[in-house]
Length: 187
Image (cartoon, rainbow, N blue to C red):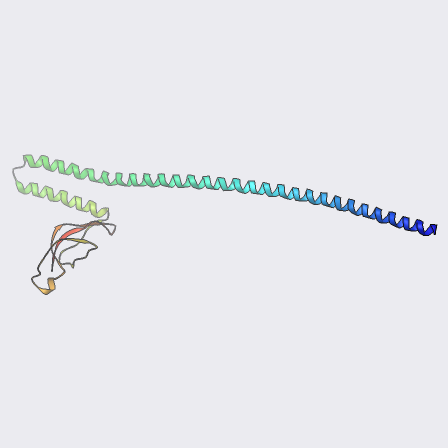
């Protein structure tokens, strides 16, 4: 019996030793798992920090882009109008010379001729800048291009809805109306 008792005691001791070893192994595994998890958390934190930094840089870059394009647009508009005015100045010079010549000229026909030359030059300038006169002669009334200031009775049925007279010319710039033609319409 004493052998049996010793065997059982040995078995109990072995079981306890195995349990202790298993607990120590599990504890070591838990420590390793925690260390691995901590390492993974640190890596993820670093990735998040990198992504946030990249996001902030990209946002700042975009803000700078917006500011730069707004500034470029303003400069473009400013310089475009500058070009138009630079082309108008010679026309003003011609008018001044015409006025000076009109004061000294005994012949009215020469003044008319000079004014027609300036007028033609000005019309060419407008055409070069895509400004076109809206045609109204014998045209049907169109609210997209014309403004009716008055209506008169039509003398015949084929005149109804057509423009009889143009009181003020209208103009388009690049096919966009910048001033409507003021017209008289037959009804």
